[in-house]
Image (cartoon, rainbow, N blue to C red; front, side, top):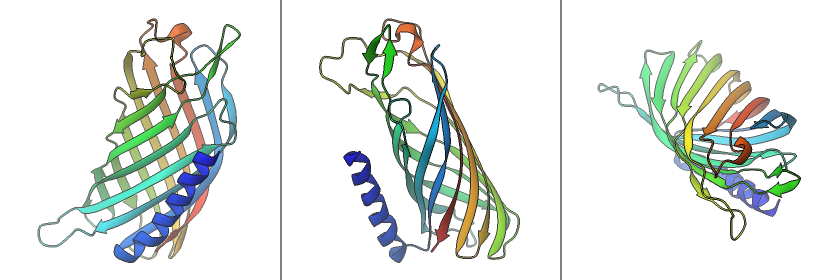
Length: 234
């Protein structure tokens, strides 16, 4: 809990100070429900919160239609960390405009996932934590150029082999062998000038090979999250 509070305070501080040096920024808070299923275990659902922010470091355009450069991050905190993961992510990348309503680009993103433990044959099994390099493709459509407008946003990313970190000393098993994975996020919202509301749906899947490092396929993981929230535009 202290680690989560430290990251949250740092996130709030950065998001409060960065807009003074950038051309546009957003800061939002979401709440909803996450459902996680590991291997053959039953799916478990609990409440989840998410703090996120994004800044436009350099606004594009001009005769060369240069892309905008954006950076941001998020902190995800479930109410029950025995079944769901705390997550921390930072990203940056270009966004290209195609006309006055549509933009698309990609982000280079680093995500840390504190994977929850599991019960394996009556014994608590501490899974390895993940550190991921992600390259999501991002597309956004705004229905108007006015300060008040609706928007749709989609983010799609393949998952790559994680960097593993053992949560305990003398971890007894070899690292699992990653097979494939993906993360898909869809967002619909409305901007009211200086603030906005939005709804988010996300689905993510990790599959690992059935080896000694993945007993009972306890690393095979599917997450579905539905959230709604509000935010501010600076």
